[in-house]
Image (cartoon, rainbow, N blue to C red; front, top):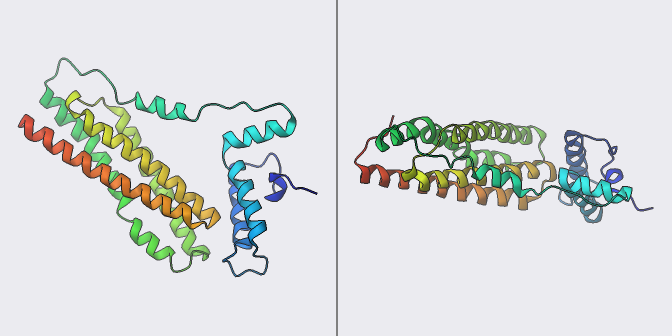
Length: 239
């Protein structure tokens, strides 16, 4: 008998995302070909991965459920979130204030707090990965890495809130664009590394590292762009 994805992950059809993640982690650890478990097996591990790939994604899970019920697929465009976010930092300049004041306030209220939060996310990564590499299958080490990722989520949300709080001056549009893309790369990188904590698939970890590397470069680009604007305007916006 062919098992459906819920049966493969040994969860009910009403399981929450947390229950699905926990079940997947348990089964991935049990059947991972490198886990040294007697139950380890590539074929079963492949089926578990395929099931989790669908059920961990609310959009794919909805489509899968609808197909099983014979209703047909209907889903929202995942790109709507990105399109909506792109509108957040495009606001009209405040006509009543000088360009220098706008730059100073934006750097103080938006850029500097975001830059510090990004440093909290990016700087510890190498140390966290070095610690985890001792034994990725050790529960205590994995819990420590998961705690770091949870903290990253919190810092990222704070940074995104700051970014949306104040319109950027027109002459800092390039800096704001680099910050925006940097935050997006961090969000995707965190998501990839979170998937590694449940699947033990190194490809997710490598992808997450690469996204963090891109974020670091965008952060440097934003800083360089800001310095150029400040130099050209002969202003001193630093708090």
